[in-house]
Length: 221
Image (cartoon, rainbow, N blue to C red; front, side, top):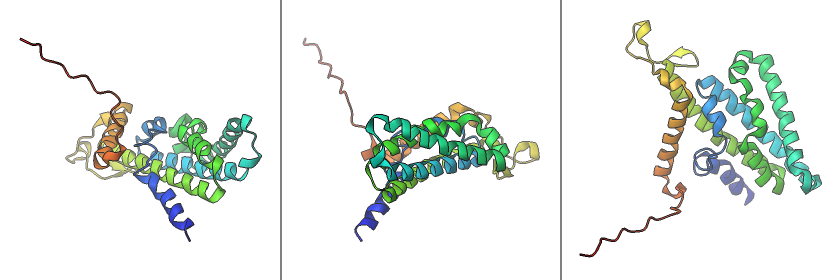
């Protein structure tokens, strides 16, 4: 009975309080690159979550058989194999989205979030707990991608999933799309704003001050 609350905490903590992007600043390259539209953000989020959960389960099951000297090689091999499968599925059934995601699906192999959870958690815990931890971190990562992807598509195109949400001027409406939202710098600023908002709401997430400047003494007269 005591295991259920622990698993629930493991699943829910990465959503906000231990979010891998806003708190740990992991996996932000793909977060910035694939969030120009909600469909690509969702596809990337689902792909990474599936790879993360499956790799965590596999690595946890064989963790006692992996020699410590080659553990990273084994982990990367497992992750890369799963990424190849996911990439082939996307190319076969979602070719347009796969083309727009470009190389970023393949780069899941070296995503610091995937390698970080397999190395720090799955390698030291049983399969169920490892997969729950991976699912929680995948959902936390997905939440940020969905929020940024939705905002960028609405503000940059006035659409969601290609359907008009805000009537644009060229269609006789009132909304003028912000083309800047479709450029990479906008994702950087939006992610920074999101990190600021979360850490303002949860002050315990802010890093402690590493250096306090010395006080300037007034010259004696």
